[in-house]
Amino acid sequence: MSDQIKTIGVLTSGGDAPGMNAAIRAVVRIAVSRGLKVKGIQRGYSGLLNEEIVDMDAKSVADIIQKGGTILYTARCEEMKTEEGQKKAAEICKKHGIEGLVVIGGDGSFQGAQKLSHLGINTIGVPGTIDLDIACTEYTIGFDTAVNTAMEAIDKIRDTSTSHERCSVIEVMGRSAGYIALWCGIANGAEDILLPEKWDHDEDALINHIKDTRKRGKKHHIIINAEGIGRSQEMATRIEKETGMETRATILGHLQRGGSPTCKDRVYASLMGAYAVDLLCQGKSNRVVAYANGQYVDFEIDEALAMKKDIDEFQFDVSKHLAR
Ligand code: ADP
Ligand code: F6P
Image 1 (cartoon, rainbow, N blue to C red):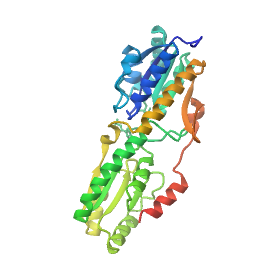
Image 2 (image 1 turned 60 degrees about the vertical axis):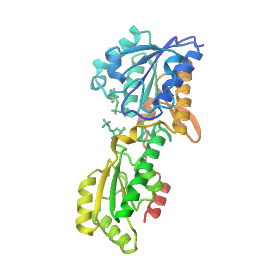
Image 3 (image 1 turned 135 degrees about the vertical axis):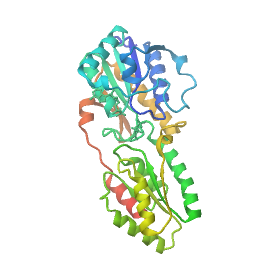
Image 4 (image 1 turned 90 degrees about the vertical axis):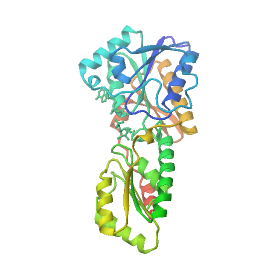
């Protein structure tokens, strides 16, 4: 049992991600096993500022590990970006006896966590986003489920594209990052993979490639386009006009954020949630949990936010040679 901290809070913030429930469950159950009290804060920082705070025990997280979404709900909250909002949030934590806080979310959420740490609340971030765009970690909660969901959906689109001998522009999420697009591009055997980090926006070259694959006898042409590039419908219209190949655009959208988490997301999220509680028990603050080189590790939030991440050159090179 920790000498320093008696009560911790847990919240989810930013876009939801499958596996967040597994992380909440681990935070609550590991904290209880360490003799801590746990308060669940609903609707992220917005709920914290509105004092939407509930007591949690081992039973409150029963029957959730297999569920998508987050039982604590999530929100985006502009007020938390202001100094006033941050001070108010820290005061509310103190009022409710919350000495330590686990924030499950992305880089934006970690900035809120960093501010709370500086205001005396021991805060630990756990990476939760389907986008995989957090630089300090090779794993983020939800990415594995999201890419599997997207992959299955794209397989289905491929069936109908082949039957109709069409071109399909399929837009996947990822905000300004191309990780979901890259993974789906490889996993679905796409003919073109457009990543915001890499694509030179040369639509003429794309159109020539479609004409070429058609000449080589391909029965469909699947283009995975990242949300960070967008314009999928415009691209489809131009492709159809210039290649004569019937073309459809599909924006997969929020279906990628839902659904029962994969085994990997359940297990990694559980271990990260447990790791976060252990950091709080050690009196640590302003840290983010990460997975790097096969191990669970932690970084100072300031350091984590300053890190940069880019598409791996080897993966990109392989993807280009496979997409033909
Ligand atoms: P994510 O956490 O997935 O990156 P957002 O970028 O939308 O998602 O951030 C989630 C929330 O984190 C924001 O709505 C806001 O409440 C909080 N947040 C974002 N940036 C800051 C900041 N600079 N300072 C304090 N809080 C922030
Ligand atoms: O960060 C997760 C994510 O799903 C991004 O891929 C996407 O750009 C964004 O959130 C969508 O946010 P909203 O649910 O607010 O439309």
